[in-house]
Image 1 (cartoon, helix red, strand yellow):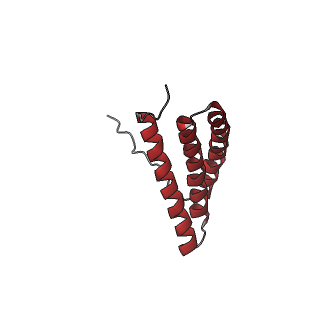
Image 2 (spheres, rainbow, N blue to C red):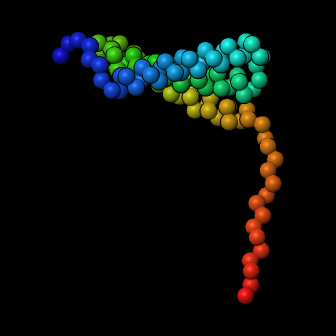
Image 3 (cartoon, helix red, strand yellow):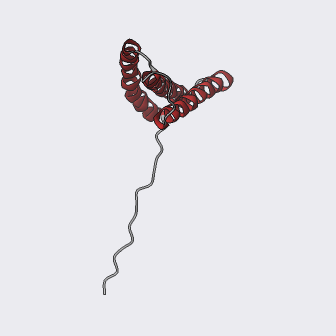
Length: 110
């Protein structure tokens, strides 16, 4: 079977890659226009790592020979293993908010 075939996983990964690119570009635009806060910087890095992951997954799906598919598979792992620390740093960049403890009503005795 030779030739290009459009199938649902390819459409979804194309959409994910496009959204990732747009999100990363928006993050870079925000950083340039408003300055780099911790949250904006780590969010942009997180979006970039997810975009790299999605791009190489797309490249692996569309590869026409084994060498390109294998190379994309190896590069896909770069995106996947950098995403976890980016999620951690993004979570840690959120400011700590004080919350009041939950108060339960007193039980009613009969």
